Length: 203
Length: 373
Image (cartoon, rainbow over all chains, first blue to last red; front, side, top):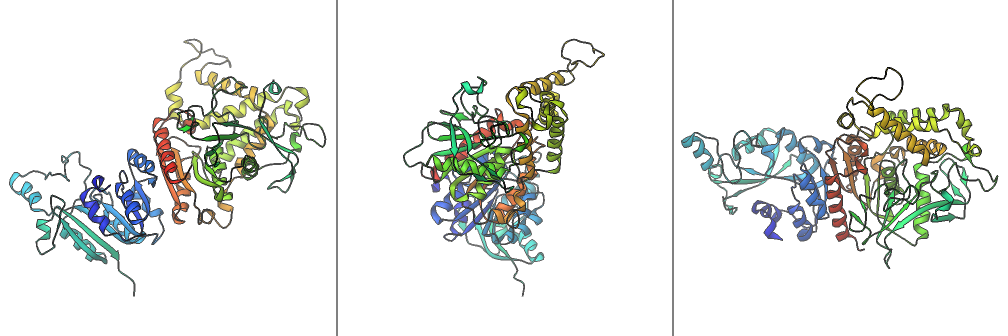
C-alpha cells in the first residue's frame, strides 16, 4: 500500500494521528486518503478538480467532491476537520492567500507541502542558464505550467508571520524524498517543504 | 390494451395517510423487479423514476415494446448489474402505469377518481415505496437511485428513512423545485386545463383525454430537458420538408416537427390528470422547510451519498446540487459529487454519458466494498 504513495505523502501521513478527521484538498486519486483510512482509521474526505481523480477516489470507496479549492472551500464550516492537507497544490492556486486562510479556518491545523523555489538548483537554473527552472516536481515549460504562484520556503514563512499564522512544524525533503534536518540553510537545501500551520488563538 | 399485459402489483391494505391529511384506500403499487434478491436480502437497489417514467426501467417495456427508460444503465453486466443486484422499480403514487392515481377506479364510488384523487407529495410517493420494500422483506436497501423527480425521491428516502438506506445516488436533481421550474410546470398544467376535453378532469368515460393540452405540456417540458446548444447542434434552423418556407402555419422547421412528435407520442402513454398531480408533487417538494433547515435534515446521516449534475442542465443546475453538498458537508456526511461535462442538458442522465457511467460504476464498486451484500 505504501508503494503507491508519493514520498512526500508518506512523510505527511506520519504527522497524522489515529482517527483524525481529514480533508485532503486536491486529493488526486485518493492514495493518501486511502492510506490514512486503512492505517490510521481516519475519517477521510477529499476535494479534487479532475474527473479522473474523482473516479479513482469513489472506486476506492472514498467520499470525494469534485470541486475547485479556489472557490469551493468557502462552503465548509469552521473547524470541521482536525487536519486539512494541501500537498503540492498551493503553487497552482489562483488565490493562495485565501486558500491558506480557508484551510486553517476549516481545519484545526493545515499541512501544506510545496516545491521550494529557493532550492539551490532552481536558483542555478536561473542564474547560470538564464532559464525558467525545471525539475521532477516542476516539470513544465513556462507557457504550460499550472504553477502560477511559486514561492520559496522563506516567502512562506514571511507570509505566515504577516498573517498571524502559527508554524507548528516545518520539514524539509531532499530530491530523493528523504527527510532532512532543518537549519539556517534550509531555504537553499530543501527540494520540497512541508509546513504544519494553524491560526493564532484569540486571547 | 393495458389490461392485457400482466403487471406486478402490490396492494396496501390499510389506508395511506397523505401529507395533505387525506387518505388513499386500498392503494396499489405497480412494480417491476430485475435480478434476484440474495438470501440476506442485502443486494436491493430501488430505482426511482422521473415525471414521465414508469416501473419498466430495464429490458424491454412490455407496453411500448421499446427499451426501458434506463436500460442503458441497468441490466446484466451493466453499471447497475442485475447479476449482482436485485433492482426494484415502482410506478409512483399518482402515476398511470398501474399504481393508484387519478385514472384509477375509486373502490368506494366505482368510478375513476379524476380530481377527487387527493393531491400527493414526493414524501407520499416514498411512503408507498417503503411499504413495498418492506413487503419484499428488505430491511435495508443497498441503494436508492434516481434522476430528476427520481432524485427528489432518493433525497426523501435518505432523510425520511435514512436507517433503511446504505447508499443514495441523487442525479440531476435538487432539494426543492425552483420558481422557474414551478413556472414551467404551471404552464403545462394550464395547457391541459385549457383543453375543453379535460372537462375538470372528468374525461375517462369519453376514452379520449385532453390530448391537445397534454401534448403542449409535454412540448414545453421537453424544451427544459434539453439545452440551447444541443437544440442548435441537432436541429439548427433546418427545414423539415423542403428548402423553402411554406408561408403558412404547417411545420416548417425540424425542431417543430420534433416537438410535435414528442407531444403526440407522450399522450398515447400518459394520463393528463396524472401529469397534473405529479407536477404538483414536484412543485411542493422542498427539503429545506423541514426540521429546521437543510443542514438539519442530514444531521447524523449514515447514508453514503453520491451526487451527479450536468453542466448544461438548466432545469436542475449544478448550483442546486452544490447547496445540498454544502449542507451535507456541514453535517460531516459521507458525500461524493461529480459534475459531468455535457451539452445534452437535463436529459443527459438518461443518455449515453460515458463519464457519468464510469464514475457511477466506480462508486457502486467502492460501496460494495464498504457494505456487505
